[in-house]
Image (tube, rainbow, N blue to C red):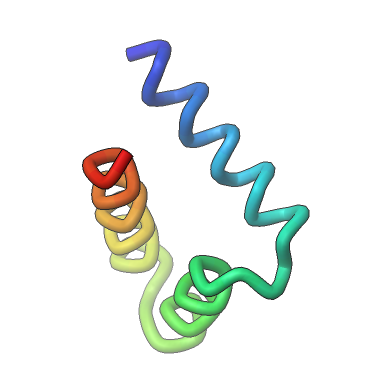
Length: 54
């Protein structure tokens, strides 16, 4: 939907600006230890968790 896509865009913008955030560190760790496909799946799961928390 439009909301979810724009929300993901906002999160990626936040990640770009707050390089020391815990989320970015998680993504960076996942980035080192898994393939691009599983990395994307884990990233999507983290986004879904953030959406549920808000």
